[in-house]
Image 1 (cartoon, helix red, strand yellow):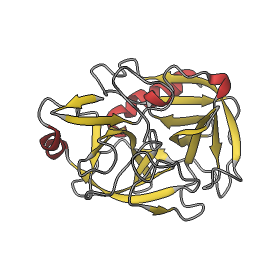
Image 2: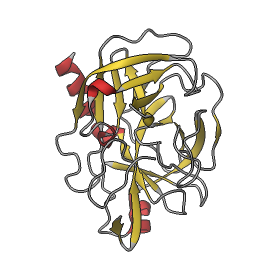
Image 3: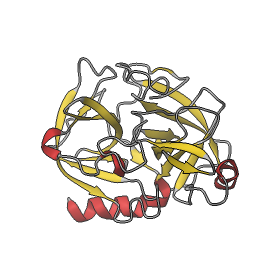
Length: 251
Protein backbone atom coordinates (compact mmCIF):
# COMPACT_ATOMS: atom_id res chain seq x y z
CA UNK A 1 0.00 0.00 0.00
CA UNK A 2 1.10 3.55 -0.70
CA UNK A 3 1.34 5.41 2.59
CA UNK A 4 0.77 9.15 3.14
CA UNK A 5 1.09 10.50 6.68
CA UNK A 6 0.62 6.94 8.01
CA UNK A 7 -2.62 6.56 6.03
CA UNK A 8 -2.99 3.70 3.55
CA UNK A 9 -4.28 5.22 0.32
CA UNK A 10 -6.13 3.37 -2.42
CA UNK A 11 -5.81 4.98 -5.81
CA UNK A 12 -8.62 4.06 -8.14
CA UNK A 13 -6.62 2.23 -10.82
CA UNK A 14 -8.13 -0.09 -13.38
CA UNK A 15 -5.86 -2.08 -15.62
CA UNK A 16 -2.41 -1.73 -14.08
CA UNK A 17 -1.09 -2.42 -10.61
CA UNK A 18 1.85 -0.22 -9.79
CA UNK A 19 4.25 -1.33 -7.10
CA UNK A 20 2.69 -0.85 -3.65
CA UNK A 21 -0.42 0.74 -5.15
CA UNK A 22 -3.86 -0.71 -5.72
CA UNK A 23 -6.18 1.20 -8.00
CA UNK A 24 -9.82 1.45 -9.04
CA UNK A 25 -12.87 3.03 -7.18
CA UNK A 26 -18.10 2.10 -6.32
CA UNK A 27 -20.06 4.82 -4.76
CA UNK A 28 -20.45 4.17 -1.02
CA UNK A 29 -23.54 5.49 0.76
CA UNK A 30 -25.28 6.61 -2.42
CA UNK A 31 -28.40 5.39 -4.20
CA UNK A 32 -29.35 3.81 -7.49
CA UNK A 33 -29.36 6.51 -10.16
CA UNK A 34 -32.62 7.37 -11.90
CA UNK A 35 -32.68 5.72 -15.31
CA UNK A 36 -31.36 8.11 -17.95
CA UNK A 37 -30.32 10.78 -15.42
CA UNK A 38 -26.65 10.64 -16.44
CA UNK A 39 -26.67 10.12 -20.24
CA UNK A 40 -23.02 11.22 -20.43
CA UNK A 41 -21.82 8.40 -18.15
CA UNK A 42 -20.00 5.50 -19.77
CA UNK A 43 -18.49 2.28 -18.49
CA UNK A 44 -14.95 1.54 -19.63
CA UNK A 45 -14.64 -2.21 -19.98
CA UNK A 46 -11.92 -4.78 -20.56
CA UNK A 47 -11.90 -8.55 -20.90
CA UNK A 48 -13.46 -9.00 -17.46
CA UNK A 49 -16.13 -6.31 -17.68
CA UNK A 50 -16.38 -2.92 -16.00
CA UNK A 51 -13.15 -1.34 -14.81
CA UNK A 52 -13.62 2.45 -14.81
CA UNK A 53 -16.06 5.20 -15.57
CA UNK A 54 -15.82 8.09 -17.99
CA UNK A 55 -17.72 11.05 -19.38
CA UNK A 56 -18.79 11.45 -22.99
CA UNK A 57 -17.79 15.03 -23.91
CA UNK A 58 -18.13 14.79 -27.70
CA UNK A 59 -19.43 12.30 -30.24
CA UNK A 60 -15.88 10.96 -30.60
CA UNK A 61 -14.29 11.61 -27.19
CA UNK A 62 -14.48 10.27 -23.63
CA UNK A 63 -12.82 11.93 -20.64
CA UNK A 64 -11.46 9.62 -17.93
CA UNK A 65 -8.55 9.08 -15.54
CA UNK A 66 -5.08 8.28 -16.88
CA UNK A 67 -4.67 5.27 -14.60
CA UNK A 68 -7.72 3.73 -16.29
CA UNK A 69 -5.93 3.44 -19.63
CA UNK A 70 -2.27 3.18 -18.64
CA UNK A 71 -0.78 0.06 -20.20
CA UNK A 72 -4.16 -1.08 -21.50
CA UNK A 73 -4.60 -3.26 -24.61
CA UNK A 74 -6.94 -1.18 -26.77
CA UNK A 75 -8.03 -4.21 -28.77
CA UNK A 76 -9.63 -5.70 -25.65
CA UNK A 77 -11.33 -2.50 -24.45
CA UNK A 78 -14.66 -0.86 -25.17
CA UNK A 79 -17.06 1.63 -23.68
CA UNK A 80 -20.71 0.97 -22.91
CA UNK A 81 -23.02 3.99 -23.24
CA UNK A 82 -26.73 4.58 -22.89
CA UNK A 83 -27.60 2.32 -19.97
CA UNK A 84 -27.61 2.36 -16.18
CA UNK A 85 -27.48 -1.44 -16.09
CA UNK A 86 -24.20 -3.21 -16.87
CA UNK A 87 -26.06 -6.42 -17.66
CA UNK A 88 -28.39 -5.17 -20.38
CA UNK A 89 -29.09 -2.40 -22.85
CA UNK A 90 -26.79 0.31 -24.07
CA UNK A 91 -24.54 0.64 -27.10
CA UNK A 92 -20.94 -0.52 -27.25
CA UNK A 93 -18.17 1.50 -28.89
CA UNK A 94 -14.52 0.66 -29.38
CA UNK A 95 -11.35 2.61 -28.79
CA UNK A 96 -9.16 4.06 -31.52
CA UNK A 97 -6.56 5.86 -29.41
CA UNK A 98 -5.87 7.07 -25.89
CA UNK A 99 -4.10 10.24 -24.78
CA UNK A 100 -2.64 10.39 -21.28
CA UNK A 101 -1.31 13.58 -19.74
CA UNK A 102 2.44 13.64 -20.36
CA UNK A 103 3.10 14.36 -16.68
CA UNK A 104 0.83 11.66 -15.30
CA UNK A 105 2.05 10.39 -11.91
CA UNK A 106 4.85 13.00 -11.83
CA UNK A 107 4.78 13.49 -8.87
CA UNK A 108 2.76 10.57 -7.49
CA UNK A 109 -0.99 10.75 -8.20
CA UNK A 110 -0.68 14.01 -10.16
CA UNK A 111 -2.09 14.79 -13.63
CA UNK A 112 -4.36 11.74 -13.60
CA UNK A 113 -6.38 12.63 -16.69
CA UNK A 114 -6.79 11.04 -20.11
CA UNK A 115 -8.85 11.23 -23.27
CA UNK A 116 -10.19 8.32 -25.28
CA UNK A 117 -10.83 8.76 -29.00
CA UNK A 118 -13.46 6.34 -30.24
CA UNK A 119 -13.32 4.23 -33.38
CA UNK A 120 -16.69 5.55 -34.55
CA UNK A 121 -18.92 8.47 -33.68
CA UNK A 122 -21.53 8.00 -30.98
CA UNK A 123 -25.16 8.30 -31.99
CA UNK A 124 -26.86 10.66 -29.56
CA UNK A 125 -30.29 9.92 -28.09
CA UNK A 126 -32.28 10.54 -24.92
CA UNK A 127 -29.99 8.06 -23.16
CA UNK A 128 -26.70 9.05 -24.81
CA UNK A 129 -25.62 12.68 -24.61
CA UNK A 130 -22.37 14.60 -24.37
CA UNK A 131 -21.70 16.92 -21.44
CA UNK A 132 -19.61 20.08 -21.35
CA UNK A 133 -16.39 20.15 -19.33
CA UNK A 134 -15.97 23.22 -17.15
CA UNK A 135 -13.26 25.88 -17.19
CA UNK A 136 -14.60 27.58 -14.06
CA UNK A 137 -13.60 26.99 -10.46
CA UNK A 138 -16.11 25.32 -8.15
CA UNK A 139 -17.39 27.61 -5.37
CA UNK A 140 -16.84 26.74 -1.72
CA UNK A 141 -19.53 24.47 -0.32
CA UNK A 142 -20.81 23.42 -3.75
CA UNK A 143 -22.76 20.16 -3.90
CA UNK A 144 -21.39 17.97 -6.67
CA UNK A 145 -22.96 14.82 -8.13
CA UNK A 146 -20.84 11.70 -8.55
CA UNK A 147 -22.12 8.76 -10.59
CA UNK A 148 -20.39 5.43 -11.08
CA UNK A 149 -20.36 1.65 -10.83
CA UNK A 150 -17.79 1.50 -8.04
CA UNK A 151 -18.04 -0.93 -5.16
CA UNK A 152 -20.59 -0.31 -2.41
CA UNK A 153 -17.93 -1.00 0.20
CA UNK A 154 -14.23 -1.83 0.33
CA UNK A 155 -13.83 -5.34 -1.04
CA UNK A 156 -17.49 -5.53 -2.03
CA UNK A 157 -18.94 -6.43 -5.41
CA UNK A 158 -19.30 -4.13 -8.41
CA UNK A 159 -23.00 -3.20 -8.67
CA UNK A 160 -24.90 -3.77 -11.89
CA UNK A 161 -26.91 -0.56 -11.54
CA UNK A 162 -25.36 2.91 -11.78
CA UNK A 163 -25.04 4.63 -8.40
CA UNK A 164 -25.33 8.33 -7.59
CA UNK A 165 -24.38 10.49 -4.63
CA UNK A 166 -24.21 14.22 -3.89
CA UNK A 167 -20.91 15.22 -2.30
CA UNK A 168 -19.69 18.52 -0.87
CA UNK A 169 -16.70 20.30 -2.35
CA UNK A 170 -13.78 20.76 0.06
CA UNK A 171 -11.36 23.53 -0.91
CA UNK A 172 -7.67 22.88 -1.45
CA UNK A 173 -6.45 24.20 1.91
CA UNK A 174 -9.04 22.22 3.90
CA UNK A 175 -8.29 19.06 1.94
CA UNK A 176 -4.57 19.38 2.54
CA UNK A 177 -5.28 19.83 6.25
CA UNK A 178 -6.85 16.35 6.29
CA UNK A 179 -3.84 14.67 4.68
CA UNK A 180 -0.97 16.92 5.74
CA UNK A 181 1.15 19.49 3.87
CA UNK A 182 3.36 16.88 2.19
CA UNK A 183 0.48 14.79 0.86
CA UNK A 184 -0.29 13.97 -2.76
CA UNK A 185 -3.12 16.52 -2.88
CA UNK A 186 -2.02 19.22 -5.32
CA UNK A 187 -3.61 22.16 -7.13
CA UNK A 188 -4.78 19.82 -9.89
CA UNK A 189 -7.03 17.94 -7.47
CA UNK A 190 -10.58 18.70 -6.38
CA UNK A 191 -11.65 17.16 -3.07
CA UNK A 192 -15.09 16.10 -1.84
CA UNK A 193 -16.32 14.95 1.54
CA UNK A 194 -19.63 14.50 3.34
CA UNK A 195 -19.05 12.14 6.25
CA UNK A 196 -17.77 8.67 7.00
CA UNK A 197 -19.73 6.09 5.01
CA UNK A 198 -20.20 8.26 1.90
CA UNK A 199 -17.81 8.60 -1.03
CA UNK A 200 -16.12 6.88 -3.93
CA UNK A 201 -14.72 3.36 -4.03
CA UNK A 202 -13.02 0.85 -6.35
CA UNK A 203 -14.56 0.97 -9.83
CA UNK A 204 -15.48 4.68 -9.67
CA UNK A 205 -12.13 5.71 -11.14
CA UNK A 206 -12.52 8.08 -14.07
CA UNK A 207 -16.19 8.65 -13.31
CA UNK A 208 -17.46 12.22 -13.66
CA UNK A 209 -18.43 14.63 -10.92
CA UNK A 210 -20.94 17.18 -12.20
CA UNK A 211 -21.87 20.67 -11.02
CA UNK A 212 -24.34 22.93 -12.85
CA UNK A 213 -24.59 20.39 -15.68
CA UNK A 214 -20.85 20.46 -16.41
CA UNK A 215 -18.10 17.97 -15.60
CA UNK A 216 -15.88 19.54 -12.94
CA UNK A 217 -13.85 16.51 -11.82
CA UNK A 218 -12.94 12.86 -12.46
CA UNK A 219 -12.51 10.34 -9.67
CA UNK A 220 -8.81 9.71 -8.94
CA UNK A 221 -7.87 8.43 -5.47
CA UNK A 222 -8.81 8.24 -1.81
CA UNK A 223 -8.57 6.23 1.39
CA UNK A 224 -10.67 3.13 0.63
CA UNK A 225 -13.52 3.41 1.00
CA UNK A 226 -15.49 6.29 2.60
CA UNK A 227 -13.47 5.94 5.81
CA UNK A 228 -13.91 9.53 6.93
CA UNK A 229 -11.32 11.22 4.70
CA UNK A 230 -11.92 13.32 1.55
CA UNK A 231 -11.68 11.76 -1.89
CA UNK A 232 -9.33 13.46 -4.37
CA UNK A 233 -10.41 13.92 -7.97
CA UNK A 234 -8.88 15.40 -11.11
CA UNK A 235 -9.90 19.09 -11.23
CA UNK A 236 -11.19 19.56 -14.79
CA UNK A 237 -10.84 23.36 -14.83
CA UNK A 238 -7.11 22.98 -14.17
CA UNK A 239 -6.78 20.71 -17.23
CA UNK A 240 -9.28 22.51 -19.45
CA UNK A 241 -6.65 23.78 -21.89
CA UNK A 242 -4.97 20.36 -22.10
CA UNK A 243 -8.31 18.72 -22.88
CA UNK A 244 -9.24 21.31 -25.50
CA UNK A 245 -5.88 21.34 -27.29
CA UNK A 246 -5.56 17.54 -27.26
CA UNK A 247 -8.95 17.16 -28.92
CA UNK A 248 -8.33 19.93 -31.46
CA UNK A 249 -4.93 18.51 -32.38
CA UNK A 250 -6.26 14.99 -32.94
CA UNK A 251 -9.65 15.44 -34.55
